Structure formats: structure tokens, C-alpha cells
Image 1 (tube, rainbow, N blue to C red):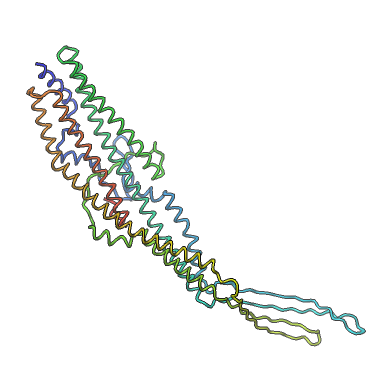
Image 2 (cartoon, rainbow, N blue to C red):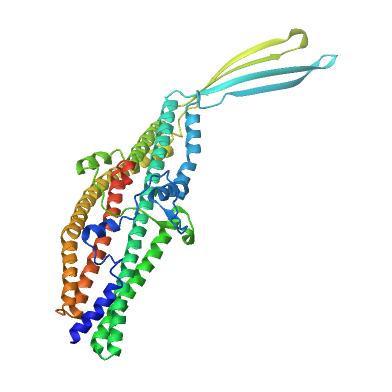
Length: 451
């Protein structure tokens, strides 16, 4: 008698909740329910639902992150300086010409006539010339430095978009988790309330009531944990797109797996062309040119000048034209400091490029294997575990109506279904994070980061 009344109580609780519960959905239906809306393109504006709540799409989050990221903006602010260096390096001559003037008042004693005053003047123009090809090295160094900075800007933009995408999917997964835990709480609270009523009527035992109460409290604790994690994830996303956490809209998008648009060979081939490595290659080229420039600076610059002037007595003024050539003798200072610093910088950049290339290839291989594992795990959950659990839930409902199972058996079935949905939600979240990290590490096309 007790098992039938208990089954009746549990059936009443389940009936009040089953209409909107994803715990009793088939695998395919539940997977579709996690796709709240398709991800919009970056140009799409925020949409508003029927009650006026704003929604944030992935494209909008990427646009905000790209326009407000401080690292990206700092890199972009350096463009003016690099372009100025390039403009100076492209000048016809590195040194400006020098104009000099000289005015002399001379007093010449005259025998028996006092002093004769004379006004003499001269003007000159001189130009320092580099003779060891410094202009070409300077231009190559400036061009490579500017190309490296532009590659760093592209890398900072990709990093900002990848970070925003990862945090967006994290918030999206936790939103689904909160919905799941809330529905689970309603199920277990309804069960506990129904059993409490039956116990008050003397039809159920205290053990049954305690078991149902413990499950309800566990569900309430899981919901609280999910809500706390969602708050933290929303704060991180708000910091990424520079919005106050209180004004961050609800995010909408697809958490499901997307078909791969690349192979491991394509990713490894794309590593050399990724912005981070391109920047290091250009930094190495710039450092090589600077070393050549410093070495060429050991050759003395030649200064050529021409001067004209007038001097002599007023009755016999002389016009002078003078051509000057000056060359410093490099006896003591041989620019050892500049050459040593340039050589050290070149060695450091070469080491960094080689290390980054090796580490990047290793990371791509490791992330590829992890992505394979996550895809296999998601498919197993969707294709095998969830359908079996859906069958178990249907069978448990029939068994409870027939009085063949009790509270403990039904709780086990519901707990297994809940854990499976949690595992699937977590696996999809990890899948998206790993996919984005793999694409960022390999330098895959930016369009590939948008499902």
C-alpha cells in the first residue's frame, strides 16, 4: 500500500513539472533546446524579446571587445610613432643641411690717419653625407618595424575576439546550467512537498520524507553554485566588452558543436602565417637591419661645405669662395655600444621566434587531440547515453504508476538523467573553449571563429 501511495505522490510532483522539463526530453529534443537562437553576424543589432529584455549576440560581443580592448587600442596608438620613424627613414638624406653666416667688423690702424673700419661677411652651406649605405638599412629597419607592429595589432585583435568568444560561450553554458538546475529543483521540491503531505496523513514514513528533503536541498545547492558561477562569468564578459555587469544583456547563441572547417595539416601549415609569428619574423628583420646600420656607422660621415664672403679694404674688396671637406677620424670611438646592443636584440628576437614556433606547433597538436576527445565525448552523450536515459525515464514512470519501484529507484533514474545533461552541457562548453583556443593558437582564418 505504501509503495502505491508513494508512487502516486511522486507522480503528482512529476506531473506538475514534466511539461517544461528537459530532464525527461529525448536526446535530440534536449540538444535542440540548448540552441536558443542562431548566432548573428557582427552587423546585427541587439534584439529585444516580447517583454523588452535586451539580448547580446556573439557578433555584438566581438564588435564591442574589438572596439574597447585596451591592449588593442594601445597597440593602435603606437602606429603614429612607427609611421613617423618610417617617414624619417625614407627622407632623401638623414642629416639636414647647415647654414652658417659670419659678420666681422675690423679696425685697421693707418699711419698718420687713425683707424680704418671695415665690414666683412661670409655665408656657408654644409651637408653631412653617409657613405656606407646607412639610409637603406635605416629604411629596411623602419619598414620591418612598422610591419611587425601591424602584425601585433592583428594578433591583439584576434586575442580580444577569442577571449570575448570564450567568455561568451562560458556565460551561455552557465545560463543553460542554471535553467537545468532550476528545473531539477522544481522536480525535487515538488516530490518533497507531495511526500510531506502524504506523511502528514500518516501514509508515508519519515525516511521517505527525509530522502526527498535531502534531494531537494542538494538541487537547491547545485542551483546556487550555478548562479554564482554565472555571476562570475558575466563579470568576466562585462570586463572584456567594457560594460557594467548590471547592464550586461542576456546572451543568446548556439552551444552545439560546429563542423570542422580545417584539418590538422592545414592548421600546422597556417602556423607560420599567424600574426604573432609574422610579427616576430618582422622584428627579426628589423633587428638585422639595425645591426647592419650600427656596423655601417663605424664608417665616418663626410661633411661637404661651400662658403662665400667679402673681405678687404673698401677700395679693394675681395670675394672669397671656399670649398670644405671634413672627415672625422674613427680612432677611439667605434660604436661598440650600439653594435653590441643591436646584436643582443637580434639574438633575443631569434630565440623568441624559434621558441614560439616550436611551442605553437606543440600546442596545436595537443589542442587538436583534446578537441577530438571532446567531440567523441559529446557524440557519446548525445547518441548513446541520453537516449538510454530517456528510455529509463519513460520506463520508470510506467513502473511507478504500477507500483513496481519506490522512491530510491526513481531518484536514481532522475539523478542519472540530471548528471548526463550536466555532463553534456559542460562538454559542449569545453568544446567551444578548446576550438577557439586551437584556432587562435594556429592563426586560423578569423572567419572560422564565428560559428
